[in-house]
Length: 141
Image (spheres, rainbow, N blue to C red):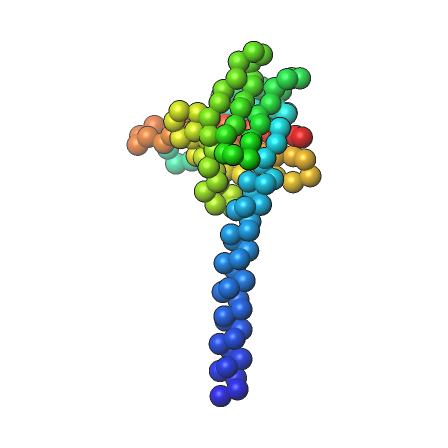
């Protein structure tokens, strides 16, 4: 009897702890993303329908003034071409995924965010019978 109570308490603690961690991590992602990030590089890769890398489509090395700024209110501003600002909204979907919406929804997955660096991938649309492109954004504070 004592063992079953101990097991029930242990299971309760495990499940409630997991729920709290997951919720706080999603909040932490938004907190970590918020601010101005300078572009290190932007790389486009082509993939076939099975996800096999076909090659690099494009590569851009960031210069002074290239940035993306995530605001705490869920909006962002991106400047990759001097004098041109792309604006939109972003939504946190999970601990490793968010959506950029500059007019259309662009699903993104976080590769890394820590110590002043942030790398994420914008996933291109996948059409049946065709390949797709993913854009890797490498940023620093």
